[in-house]
Image (cartoon, rainbow, N blue to C red; front, top):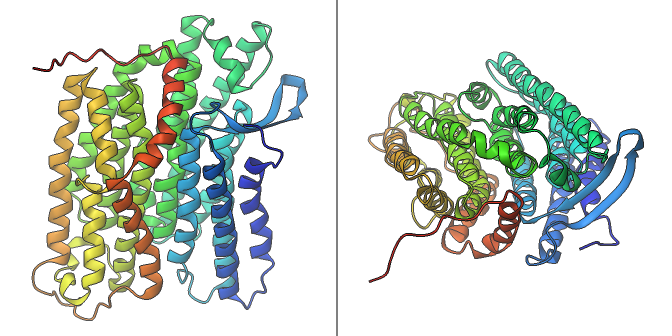
Length: 508
């Protein structure tokens, strides 16, 4: 679908324009700065909802396409378009950002300038992430992929808590290194295209060019893209920057990172690694599946041993990203549909769990699990919200992550049964770390210092209620999301010349 209205340009330019609106708020009006940021993010949610309504699930693979001249000397264009996979991630981003703004409403106390800057940086991240999801030019994608690091660095390094400087630097160095390797791969990709007489960086054209490239060149280019995405996602063993960010950043920033920005990495694997380099993806598939399975088990095991509630949640995300990457690289339609849906469900689940934990930590002033106990007796709504969010993290049937995890495991089992069996062990491990954490923090007698904890206030309920509602709705009725995802996944499977394995089950 080609639309006369530049919806996708509006999608990422609206939050960028919103930065100016927020920064123009008088320095004495902190609440006005909060409201300005919220209004901008809600306006973007309306745009995303409009795109979702207008999107034709059975139509062209890329819709609302815009293409304009950018850097003509080497064929780079401002080309944007959206498929079903990008659409659900765009909607996820548009839903979560206003929730995060409300969640961090009073994080800066009376510091109006800090509030303005934090909201402006958050809107900058939102705009760049939106553009990364809809970019169809590889250079355009790379530019915003790297540019996102700048506002994130300041959100963590300047406005975080204890250890924020070292966490921000580690995050930046890891991702800059991956980005530099990816830049070399982008240059190599253009050289290959130019050598084939097609000097372009349009993703759709490059898919036909790279298929004829030398296998060794394909593998090198694939490695450049994959390394950057593996660090961003993160995939074990490139994950070590994440726990530090999760414990040092403000809860809203940590959720922005884990629930939204990290999805750019897994999205990049599905779009660029698989479709530009299908042969190289198949060649490296056993290695990446092995790393993903290790990450699933590793994240779950380390979560069990954590004493810091925020660090525990960070390790659960490492395990969940292992599931997402596993589903992508088993190259079955169930696995890739499950992975895409998992990106959405993980974003909602992690946001709910991390934000409820953040509300609790802000009241008590400590992240240590051992300092809590009996919270359900003094703050039952908070404890109940924490339980629902925790149960979603362990993929309890009836909550959104169950369907996506189930699809990933089915898709994996049809091609790699051993990997599926090992990955299934994480279900038991997740039950251990979630239920044990809940028992220690929320159950038992009220420990000293917890007797005066207040329950969730209306603003916090406004943050948590829509997340829990989404977990319930997508848990029992994921069809609207899958109706959009499945056709896009079928296009991916066709582009990488893969078909689902024949089922060997017989009915009797």
